[in-house]
Length: 113
Length: 110
Image 1 (cartoon, one colour):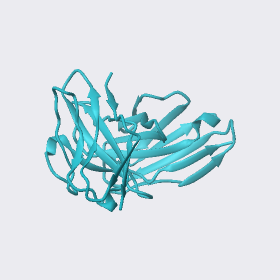
Image 2 (cartoon, rainbow over the protein chains, first blue to last red):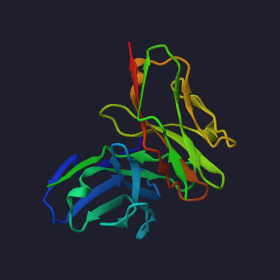
Image 3 (cartoon, rainbow over the protein chains, first blue to last red):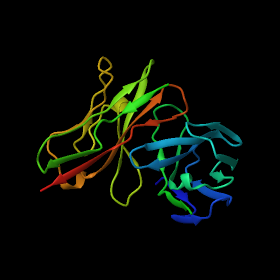
């Protein structure tokens, strides 16, 4: 059974703090993704990685960075959190290729005050 | 750039009634289309993909390239179908990168 885990379910941070969101998958998947999920906007891709140390910007990368030092772990970093980054963050992983299923983590609800 | 449109934020139907969740897309090439579902307090999961041409939980979806649509259908709604449904598109050969629609909440009432 595929497992994608995220380090926190809920997180509250202050404006200007550096925030780390961690994601781990146990299926040896090449691809990993970070999305944010907002009501009325659906899921929007922030960054994805198709291999260790490889990353590509998604649709909304501004204010975020990522790190993938090991195949199973993909971190999302908010260098200086702002209130407009309050959101639900979803991590996902998949095998290489165009029609493979993405497996999602449970999400991290981040509130920036 | 590709785009996925789900025109309805909320669709409310009675139990036993037919369901159609609309999805339209814009993409110049041959896309791969998916439906993902999120039940209350559960993680987002794949419901079906057009390439498989399968029926999952009684749901089907046909890719209509002429109308650029991938509507999700079920002949008889059940209470357990109540959930958030997202249509998603992956351009061929792009490492499974998905573009999601804004989602439709399906509410099945007695």
